[in-house]
Length: 71
Image (cartoon, rainbow, N blue to C red; front, side):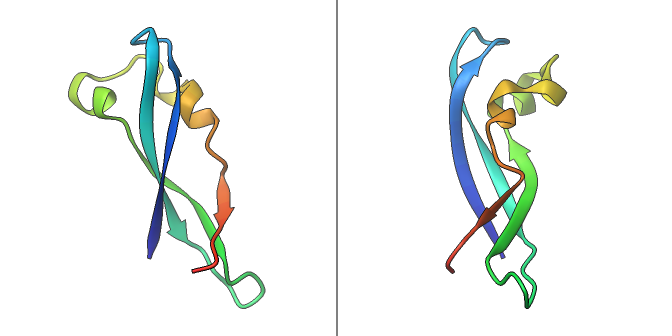
């Protein structure tokens, strides 16, 4: 199971606010039944045009490496 979260912030490549979607992958254990870890990042601009700062994206940097869910 995965959970998706949308993050919005300033994109220096586009010089405007933009949004990306980050998928979180199920990493639950008996000790932590609500843990999800960061997986794929979906940025439509990067997908269609490429991005020179993909690896240092400031919007992706705002996304936590793991989240908890009550699901």
